[in-house]
Length: 364
Image (tube, rainbow, N blue to C red; front, side):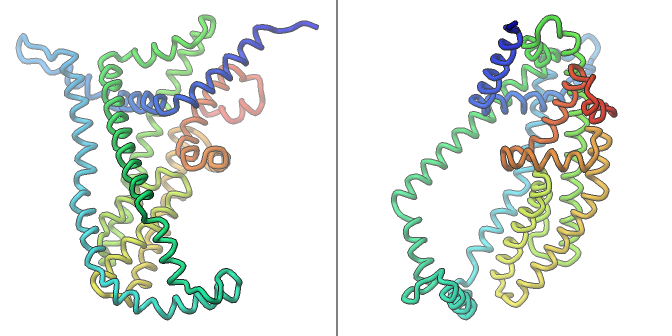
């Protein structure tokens, strides 16, 4: 029996590579984010490189720093613009008359309590109010508070390290156009360098188009939701529109999360003003606005983005997202389309004899 040691070695190396990518997933994400920023920032660097005053020519390193600063300022400004809105929303929640709200909810809670007793989900000698109080008491204790503080501190540290790492690597990727490319080519065998170069070129082209299209989709959804809610005079329309549009980064599941957050924000805004009877109408308006906006997204924006950027059929994308969601949850759904795009490009170069590969890569 002939043993193909090269094939076995290739499989082992692939498995080791997959394990290392999983084990160092955080670092891999930092590198990829820095790579995406470099793709976006290269036109800015080239623009600054053209600046010239008589004999003075803009140094390439300074152009890189300026481009990076511009991107950081834009991203930070977008988030800082919503800090006052979020602060106002916190003040709104703090002004709710919880005593009156408790009185209003007493009768509905009693009805729910009777149903839970009938369904043997609650003991006769217990009340729903006491059960909720016990659960809250078990959650809010010193141990939980210590764990929460520890998690917050750990999260803050991780965010700082992540931001610093992305900015640090993005600077060098921007300064040297070929650094990211050369880093990947180090892992490509010599005899496959030509195909590797084609894969990287096509990947950069398609992913750049995808990220631009995704950005347009998110901005469009933010605008549609905000305008729709503003038309109906819904409080915190801008905040709901921002969060609702941002959640669209999660395919299919994102609009549901965004609508839920929107209803919660809209309900708390009305509760703070004592408009308890308007909660249902406002919630209906928010849900209706999200439905209309996402119909436009599903029928116009997504088919346009998928067909022109990653060049895949919407049904094909839908199935891939479902499978990715089953394997890795929400992170899998977010990364499904970029990962599938890269896999199609690789398959086209190495497995183009397969009819399936020929079919799914015929447009790239």
